[in-house]
Image (tube, rainbow, N blue to C red; front, side):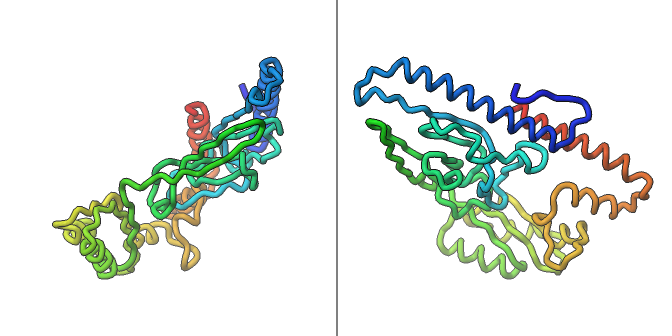
Length: 274
């Protein structure tokens, strides 16, 4: 196990133990790999075996995009690991979890290759890639190979008229894009989905998601004028929900405690599944 569990631990305690466990695990594995490499070394120029490590982690400073489905692997963000966690003997570190291709702390050979296909409409304009690395006589050459797009994604937002004009433009281009549509007008439209389906009729366009921000904003009752659901974390949304249902103050403590237990359990399930 990467960490032990003790009664009464705080989230910070758990994350601190987790990072310490990860550090020890990589140190032990890389030490074993280095010993194997020493034993297999024949002294010839082409006998230098690279040490390649992998991990499913969220590194500090990692970049994500809106609506990419990336969730915290652990409760809170304290378990974001730094580059210093990984031993220097690693010749290439291949990480997973973040969808955007990127280097870790500007280190060329510590990388997320990213997802090979868009995982959400927030990645619609993102160039996907695979990473090819060649080792030769102790050196390494890293190449990025772009992945061609096989299905276009498009995100459309605005009032009903603005959305219709954007859809008409796509239809004129014979587009077969999958669409996410954000209705942002304050004017209520009871049959919004029906109207949108009429807009794409006779085309190869397909609507996969509709966000009615008028309904969302009304439910959330934003404190600030330009506040959206993306600006809030799960605890803030839950607090707004308690306010909306006028839950008495004396009942909130127990309800919030139960809610936090559920959130923690979900995160633990995610970690165990991975």
